[in-house]
Length: 565
Ligand code: SIN
Image 1 (spheres, rainbow, N blue to C red):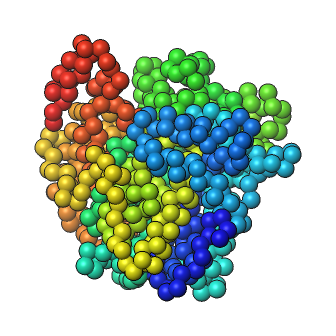
Image 2: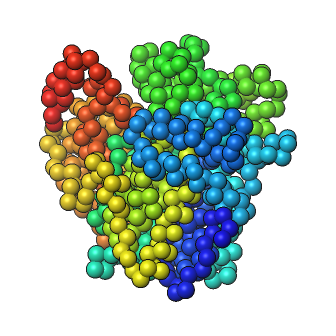
Image 3: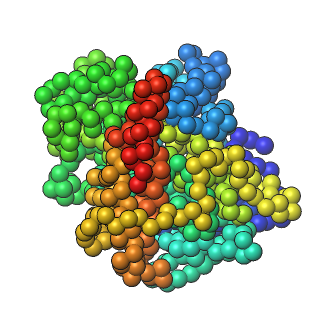
């Protein structure tokens, strides 16, 4: 068996994979190699995914001893960034097995950038204790990885090993005797279906819940909603990561560029030495964290939000100064190392070798998701999940930079392994072990109850209104009162206008709206339940958990009591 491949099984089985980001493409390829009949459904084109936009790269310790790095350090950094909320077993698997799946990617044609000695060129990103980020095409890692995997999938399709169904919006998972066996989907205005032995959800995240996001328009919480409606447990939904540096462009600038895509400025830019300045030209991050711009992502985003509030400009932006990099590393460095960002900022009217880039935090990555065990098994038989839609607990309360593509690879492969093992063991039903579910997991029965309608007039539901609400009330910094208002508005939208989002609509956008609305309710419910700040979930009305002084405990308790909603 070569890296990331499986020996063929005896009886062909059918696996339905939903989603065409890194987890979906890689899993489909591995399953097909093992002799499984694979149907890959994706709601846009194959390249429409968050993976395509990933700039930074993939973190991995390839060899040991590596100069100045170890797998143990990668594990420690991941646990630290996750603020003690990670599933340690999952982190161990992620970091230990990384090299296996990097080799798997190379087998499918991905070529990572090399340094002058012909070794992998390794970048540094925030909260990593050593440079360990593999990248491809400079800052075009996601696009290069997606392109190579898509080529392999199309080859497999030509060879009859994978059936790709594009522009197919999955509206429901079908079940027989409590087991997920297929999916209903919309294509060209028609309701269709596909049946198999199991479904692997690899549908990515939900950045479209918020007004500013680094995610493309397809990130509408579809997988989470499908799994929830099928009865699966979900977990850690209060933890939504905001990336600190998304370029701020006016709608007018977007229009005239003819490009509505989000413009992320990779964390790798700060890894190369860029700093953050406020409107007064003052570097502020060292006031908030000793690691400055290289503090964990949740800290940097929160610090920007707090700093802007302190300056009386909570909806404003700060500036990324990349000019220093060029000054230290020589003219032309930025263009060579970050060709995509160089071109995109230039198109947006900013020459970042000479000018500051206006940036603000934007919704980026959901740490929570559908509860899975370490083999991608959800709590519903026949339903697997991998990548951002899943929650193994590997990302804790705040994901470490460049661990997301890695998660999709490692746990996508493991889900395929579990599917194959289950089938060869004559149908042992899959189920997530209860230890993975943890104490904050909710079952289907625990749908958030009605929320008191104290938010008097949320207006008529629309996607922009939902995104504005989530940004204002459940964004980087939250309070109990804001979350309560958000819950009431969401409940009003759900209760008052059920006909606005009919379950049997043939319009994919109506289904996306329903999925976003459900995901928003689940997120807000989780955020209201967690009364203390932790990682990316920052409540401005409670003291952090770490307080140990007795008086503080009393304070914290009484604040909690007054927050009963
Ligand atoms: C980035 O390049 O900053 C994003 C990478 C990630 O989300 O891990």
